[in-house]
Length: 195
Image (tube, rainbow, N blue to C red; front, side):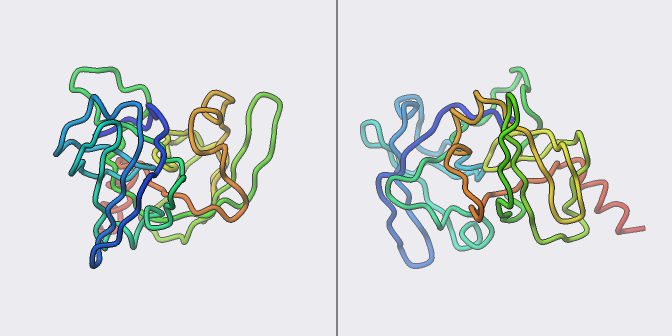
């Protein structure tokens, strides 16, 4: 379980294909606090640490993960949003994030506002993946509030701190992003489908 509050950025040092899996090695300032078998969210994707070597660690993404996320697009030098699993009893500063990406979205527009940057993302609409204005959404692992909701797109306003401390600063029109929709909204949508 995660909160969508990014702790730090990591830098991809190695990407190795092994059959249908992808082994990704990340340089991070939190590596010394990790252990093998620990879950870490990478751009919002929950992956298990399988090896640690000094200040670098390795995770493995399987075929299912690669098909539903942007993890397969990572290259050497890519910056990755990182968050360790939340501690039981700690404050929930973002919202409930599972680290299970629902689908890939695409950056459609970036607009500088006074004091924030508004990003608009589109996605392939399916009935159980919806946004609502003032609701929660996770974009590349970042917990955000929806400011404009449409059937197949939404916008979020990002404060300067978030822009500087996440890989949002690298987004361009056409950038593929990971989306995890609000878990409560997903359950409500599923329940209404069953009636």
